[in-house]
Length: 260
Ligand code: B12
Image 1: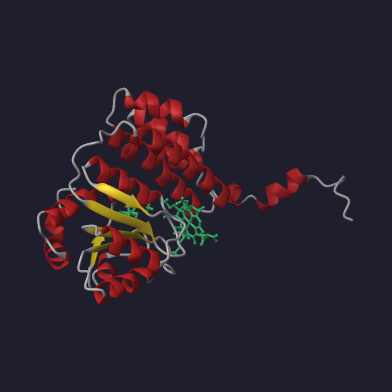
Image 2: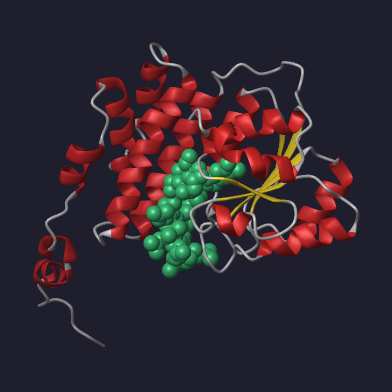
């Protein structure tokens, strides 16, 4: 048995505290990246500092003066971008990321309630995060944006098996299917799913999104189209609703998302 009584944990933690050897701190990132608008700043800070008890009141307060989508994009998402920066700099680790992600989810759920729904649907979209991929925050934001633009969404969640995606598309016949991959090891699920869909004679666009993919990859397989940021999804969906197939979306992609 090791006797820990005489161990000074303060010294151990100091020795392995990489943060103390790095000039980046949560405060320095906050200074550079947080929005100047005090309402959005307060919301973003809740995510950055993982204040999951404060995020509800902060979002509720923000919703009194700001549109719900702006509270998500200019507050919650910016906070998460700060977290991603701190993770990349080895200041934050997985526990912080998980707590920040949870904080963001609480905020999104609250803001989403304020987005008008119940209108006649423009069309159905099936969304998922790739097989093996647990990253679903970006997908959840894109789902909020599609719903708020009048689309119905079947959100299959994260780590969805290729065959389950195919089965859902066959069953519910959406106008668009989206896949999110933040890991280079999971993005290959998209061409596999698209190939099976093609084999079944299904020709709907398959939107590949998330940090692991780029436009070249998304357009490297039949059905594949690209979306870089969640807010680009509704304008692309509008074109598909207007009759564009995946080839035409590719041709006109720059002008479709250009207004962003
Ligand atoms: C949060 C996070 C997590 C959380 C995810 C929580 C959740 N519910 O999503 C947790 C802690 C679970 C996690 C786990 C892991 N993670 Co992680 N994670 C991140 C982190 C820090 C932020 C991602 C994020 O949510 N950003 C905020 C959102 C808003 O941004 P976004 O997802 O990029 O979305 C934007 C666009 O991509 C786009 N978008 C995204 N999806 C969609 C969908 C549609 C339809 C559209 C239109 C647009 C769109 O729009 C959004 C903005 O508008 C990134 C770092 C980074 N810089 O991205 C690493 C990162 C993605 N993780 C990574 C890794 C390696 C892992 C782990 C394997 C780590 C480990 N060693 O255990 C595990 C996964 C284990 C497993 N297989 O289960 C790597 C992936 C590397 C790679 N290229 O393969 C990254 C890049 C970190 C790094 N630099 O190494 N992670």
